[in-house]
Length: 182
Image 1 (cartoon, rainbow, N blue to C red):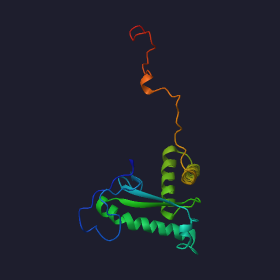
Image 2: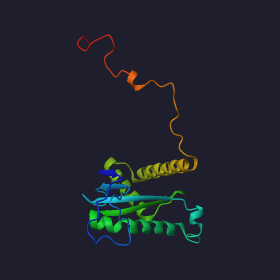
Image 3: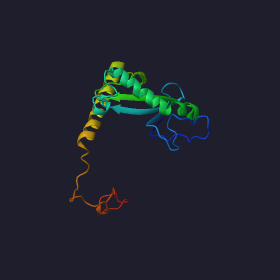
Image 4: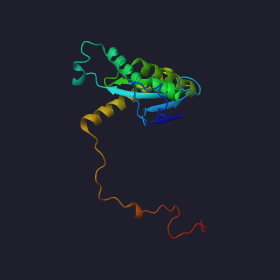
């Protein structure tokens, strides 16, 4: 059971309200899934993709290894959502942090390994083929996202030669015949 952008339950108790974390009543995470880390266990995921060579990171992350930057982004995600997910949703939380150069944080790596093992067991294919396919699809998805953010979306072109929907017939019986004569 996978849900995209699930809305979190509203905060009612004051025990969860603190200075840290997202406290909006209609807060959303990116993905929720049941059965990944345990049977019938609900898990929420929040995805962050960052570009490690951006000028905005130059001062705050200079002289740091990329693994330290990944860890810092994971900690920021945990600080925002972990307590709320654990206490209100009674679920687990996994931050999925990726960099545009193809790297991923420890939790994302663990997530990919787990999903690849589950798919390999279900399809009876080799783990190496599954993880290779997942990483390739992830790389192309990130490349597409980067290109769209740099170049912009092309969108639909204005097509003047299209037939309006009201002129189309969706009748499956050829014209001039009726259903009984077929």
